[in-house]
Length: 440
View (cartoon, rainbow, N blue to C red):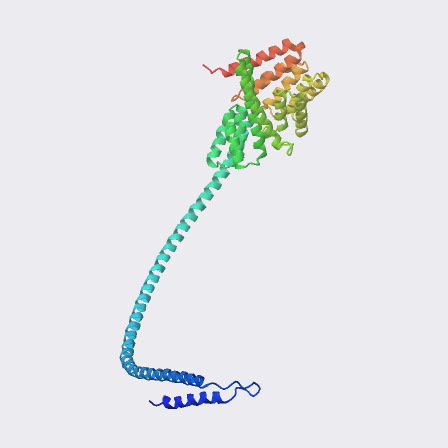
């Protein structure tokens, strides 16, 4: 076959190479090796023949494979001539199908988009409709609340006047009406709680003052008022413990005093929370809250501390007879009679001015009575006693109870005036008992 090496020429070439390698030396610089023997030459010739035989067999195999390849190439060409057009047709059909599918998907996407747009538009319309409605409702609500708040503030002024005129129940009713209009005003809750305290309804008082503190935890007047509520609760338990002790109920009396001490401790905590930083803080009667704390220490028997607190109260309310009256009694309890008389003279002067300024001010009239009793001015005391009793608040027992307790303290500390003081106490007690008895 053309292109293949003729095996005969190959054999001759191999033999010549072997002979030359035997005859010629390898290198001029190296020593010439000894000449091969006849047996070695025969062995090399035999190896050359074997190599030529292997080459001839490889040549035949290559020739056969080449023929097979030429035949296969023809068949492959025929097959490719058929398959390629078929594949082209299939690819065309597949591409057309994909194109058609894409068009359908595009159409569906367009329809879905248009539907979504309409849905979104409807939702937005509903949203803005609801927004407009809510805005209108909010506007109406705000206007209504504003009107209610203004009306509630007007009621606060009315309730304040009712309280000043000793109409506790009327003030309570008005404050409660104000809360129906605006229940988020801490001032209303505080003032209502204060009136309940003066009336003696201490649980109701605590409820509203606590509400005021929930709405405004830093409301100092409400904090002090809460201290006053707990002190008054402690006072009630103190009276109960004394009654139990007189009845021979010793264990019950001790337990009641433990509860009293708990209330007194809470009271002190509330007062000390605000008074050191706000020493001029006053209550709804215009009195210093230092006086209420002084009263707490007096009930505990801490006379020195009580005097200190009432002296602070005199600095906060210099024109009020209330702290001076309590201070004078404390001086008497310490045995300083001269200082007591001097202070009670000041009480009389201040109380007289307050009574003239406010003819229905029970507390000023009460201080005027007790100051004259302490100075031995019994005729002057009797002259204004009935006036004081008839302007005492009718909705609570605390004012008259406090007046009697003060007279009893004076009776105990001024034994020389026992007979006269006992007559005044009996007169006040009779008036109080008659008022507590329902009219037939």
